[in-house]
Length: 268
Ligand code: NAP
Image (cartoon, rainbow, N blue to C red; front, side, top):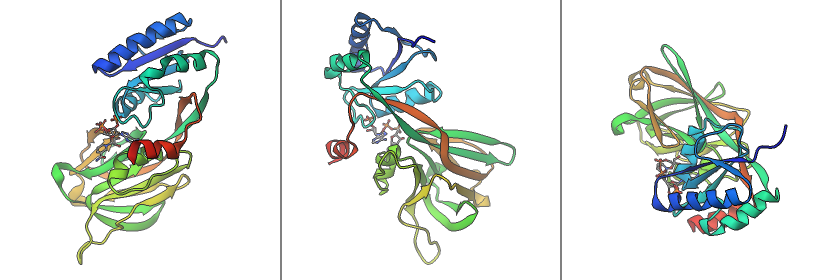
């Protein structure tokens, strides 16, 4: 089958993003590409214009499509975004010449079981389990079937390597190199006293293991799940489990990205 030359363009509503989308569309059309502003599953590329937030929302909105994603950063932190609006010509030249490669992004998969059903969730950055209305929650945490701890505190973050520089980093977690196939379990304000004792640091969990969480009975209805910034409430949660998903996101890259320079440029 002939390779598609259609590109899906998605942007947030800020002025810069709208203007960049217009310029990009014109330049792509001039180079013989077709563009859409809806999701065409047969396209060969998804371009997201905005910041990391826009990038995350686009992947969710496009239902974790296999079509590769690339981001254009318009004035945000833009950790995911490789292209700057000043660099559109170079980007389009590289696309036309086929000078790009595809990297894989690991995802975190969660299964949340209530007394009546189980719901599957997929996160690019992280899945957070926390208490509603700022409540302290108590969670029994196991790795595979080995009981690890009874966590008491605000909650926990289960982050992917790419998400390690997001909420995880602000909560004291470590930066993880993106091609390591692991999850990071980071506590949010763990209580340590004569009454409660939980790990105060993050733990790195390999891809062949899963994290199992059973909330205490009194917390079954006090849990908030936050996936890449989007909140979910479920009643009567009895068990949650998390692992590296078998699914991956394809990230198109036109240059050799240097993760450690990106860390220096964006955070230091
Ligand atoms: P948001 O306003 O969309 O994002 C909050 C900040 O996190 C923005 O500056 C965003 O970059 C940045 N960010 C997102 N993913 C990142 C990553 N992988 N590495 C480095 N920085 C990243 O907030 P939201 O809609 O509530 O949630 C989206 C994400 O923000 C979450 O998945 C979470 O990782 C992060 N977040 C962080 C905190 C915190 O640090 N205390 C709290 C809540 C959420 P842009 O400016 O480019 O959009």
